[in-house]
Amino acid sequence: QVQLVQSGAEVKKPGASVKVSCKTSGYTFATYAISWVRQAPGQGLDWMGWISGYNGDTNYAQNLQGRVTMTIDTSTSTAYLELTSLRSDDTAVYYCARDVPGLDYWGQGTLVTVSS
Amino acid sequence: DIQMTQSPSSLSASVGDRVTITCQASQDISSYLNWYQQKPGKAPKLLIYDASNLESGVPSRFSGSGSGTDFTFTISSLQPEDIATYYCQQYDNFPRTFGGGTKVEIK
Image 1 (spheres, rainbow over the protein chains, first blue to last red):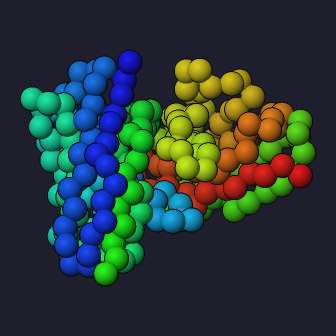
Image 2 (image 1 turned 45 degrees about the vertical axis):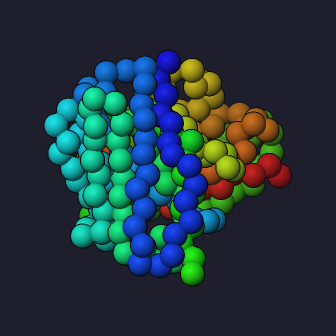
């Protein structure tokens, strides 16, 4: 069965960086893209970007340009999200999801807390 | 960027009621629209893709319709387990924007 398993919760100080992993299984990784979506406490869903599982092509949300990097490791069927220069308003649950392009399978979410 | 305007932001209905949520795109997105359900503390779940197609395993009381800029999501007979927040999302263009969400509660 299709599974996306994300890395554990992180606590970071303002200005630091965080890297979240999303290990997939149960399907051919190169066939589909991965989207990353975040949700601040009590808020709605915020699309962060998309990465092709085939060739690593990316498309990022404009408001994150310059701070976000999405990568893949096809040898382990894993996608990564790195966010730099963290601010308090980056505190959120970060989700990866298989993009078919409906987001049909989701990771369990990774809570990233940014606090001094 | 395409803006997705979802309404209402919240609603309260009785078990068995018909519930309707609308989503309006700021430009024509054809049928490139998905609907998701999110329960507290859980990841969202895809219910409807391509505006009107029911995802496998999703109960038939959920449905979607529309094309272009105006879309509707319907629960034909609200059940207690449908208490959740519902989101639309367009995928016609990047960024793949979400609507603001509709919180559905039981009256």
